[in-house]
Image (tube, rainbow, N blue to C red):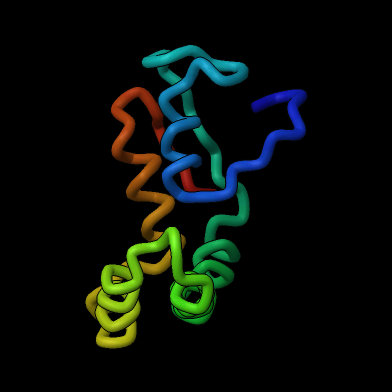
Length: 103
């Protein structure tokens, strides 16, 4: 998304961008992402931020699937769910053409 002011507002939107064709790389082109200060991001996007993320979705209601969000929040608080950091890593790693390096 180089040289654009468009912002990704959802995890689904972030995933879509990683398919390519929206900016500086094309679909299925092999790329490498270097996530600088990833340990800071792991902390910043950890349990507290993820809990707030789900609680905000529950407060907003539609268009979110509130039951699903409540389940994800429950899983998170019981130690079975993923943090936002883990979700983002999983999204990136689901794209075979992308190599993620955490720095």
